[in-house]
Length: 137
Image (cartoon, rainbow, N blue to C red; front, side, top):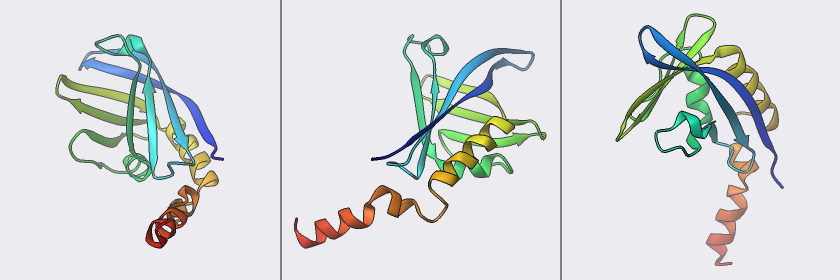
């Protein structure tokens, strides 16, 4: 049985350099998928009115609180001591999200307490699954 860690995060959607709007976001971590984190945005934040979930590595989120990181669709970087910027790219365009770094760090502490760095494979049962596969189970 896997545990799920979920935390609300204060965020702002940056529409233009001079305009931003508050945005609710939920950071989610599932011990059954220990290398990944999810950020969930409500339907009112999307173009089609549906809830939007982005999945990316826990390590990427962690690194992004201290230094610029990421390539392609998901990029993160610190913006002063109080904020972490999250840039998301799709075929329809780009969204720039400002997260409170304290929310992100608190979430990451909970994730690493549940599944410490380096123990992700054991938490996911990857070793057992690989052994079963190799044995022909």
